[in-house]
Length: 315
Image (tube, rainbow, N blue to C red; front, top):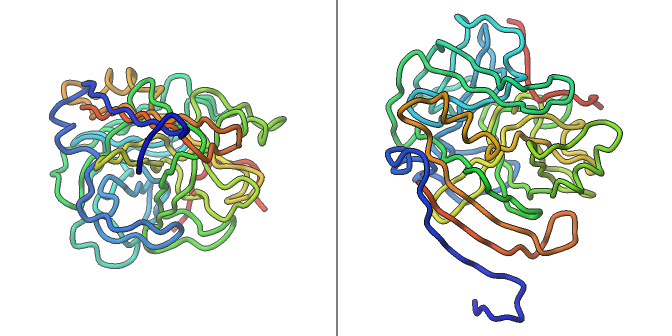
């Protein structure tokens, strides 16, 4: 494709280093990831950072992402009523009932909800979970790269959400990990959609098909990732937080904006922080999504009332 001044697309690539160089060697790489088709079963190893969190018993409650060998990123609302000793996290899992030959699991030693998490507004809906022991990376278990401070995911940015959440509001729960591609919705359009219900803050990022629906995160996906691709790297932009129903054409899904929490995450993960990668894709369209984006990629280092998207089962 030829670029010139008549086109409203510009691409600039810069290098900036932050976080752990060790993590940047491995984060965001998914060698077994095939072509993505929204709303379908994933395949083993497609999303090697995806985890399944069991708060108790034998059922999936929330998702999360592996961010280094010792820590998982998830949503604070997932950890409001739980017993620490009963929490188990599964890595390398594809099926919730079948065989997972590449799977391993860990208990946890602490859960740290963001100190400014507000359960009424869902602001700062993000949590860190420390594993009882380190995991070993493989093609099926790898950390994701995290969006660095200052990253911009403009309207229309292609994003992928994964999880074992319900296939529709109040519907069935899938056995196989699901994947769906959805565009980012700019915060002004998202705020307008939720006007009178929720305040969309700068700590949030929204995604979905406004006026169309059909693709979204849903109950059980909570805490899981929304990611976008920069070259060969997958970068996590959001943590599944809340929404109105699931895939409602009037309401996009809302996610905790990962880039707002770089300092907090680094302050807790110690000497081996996650790999942070700056991603800037700005929309130069006045539409809700921003259909013709300008790209600035800086590689570094998915009715119910408004409720958070977690699942709680009793055995």
